Length: 134
Image (cartoon, rainbow, N blue to C red; front, top):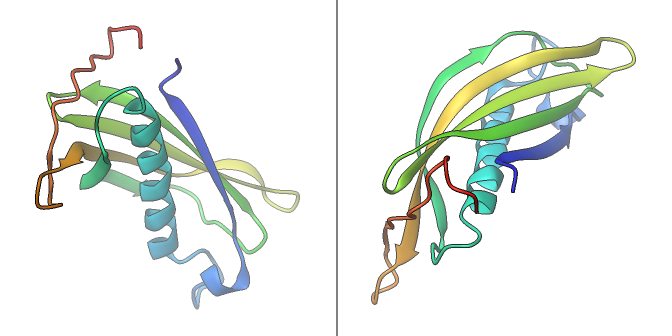
């Protein structure tokens, strides 16, 4: 199975800041959702309940994103630990008016979790290496 996942959003009027471009907070949320989708898919054959965001690193806004642009995030698991995984996300913006461009990048760390007997989330050893075939 591929470690690459995709997630898309359409930039709408409520997403625009006073400069006329995508508000950075929306981009951050979309990057996190895209990475969460990749982490969930990566863990689908385990007993993990899911994954939670541990850290957003190396976020770089590269190009402005405008009203009507499609933002397509491509996420890839690039590193795994005992309970963690690092997801590299690249967000591309595209429209007829502005073409296709790399708009934002980030590395997001997730931790696999399960629910304990009280319903609290605790870290989970996912036992997956990038060198293994799932």
